[in-house]
Image (cartoon, rainbow, N blue to C red):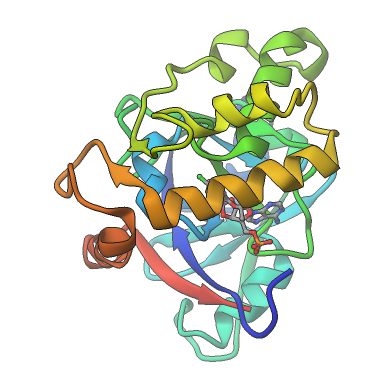
Length: 255
Ligand code: A2H
């Protein structure tokens, strides 16, 4: 765990098509032309090219909070309270919840993921290990570079019926976005295999994999795609974050 404030990039994933249950819950609560965004918090903005889905906790309840004239954010109430004191909402220190969505109700929702190679959109999927007490309670999935995300998409694809999802939602192509000398161009799959991680519940090995992936990716990584292709992660991480913010696709979030 980090000491002192953790500074995240909050990325805006715009809803293109609600899952049926969520559609019913927001129907009467939102203007027809509302822009609604799932807002994952990430420490790795430079990996957003590799988003293949976005996770919510199936046991977490989310709020839909008014973020602007016609904009709404789906995050935990805890995150909304923090955001209210960071200028994310119209009135400083205030947040307005217009609807509540149980995590299970949003599974299958199609969202647009900024910078992702999957421009057709990605699905909201369940992840049991999402913590309600960290970030926004929403986690965007980059299985090429996050061992947690990779272990989870493997599990989701394997048990698609159990999770009530379509297998193909968990199996969007994992495109290499970052290269490191030690782990090649698919760091998370490499480490998950090397450390013999079989499930998202292998907490100790995942913790180890996460540490290795993070260090190697940040200090040795080279980006393989996008406008900074060929450059060192260390040098362009903040540029990718800045670009996302300038495009209106992200903002800074700290806690
Ligand atoms: B990271 P820290 Cl590619 N519950 O983003 C569980 N995990 C959460 C979370 C929550 N409520 N909120 C955020 N996270 C994840 C990308 C990524 C991340 C990559 C590689 C490693 C990595 C894509 N997922 O994180 O405990 C988010 O996943 C490993 C450190 O605050 C976020 O960044 O340090 C990271 O954990 C924040 O973890």
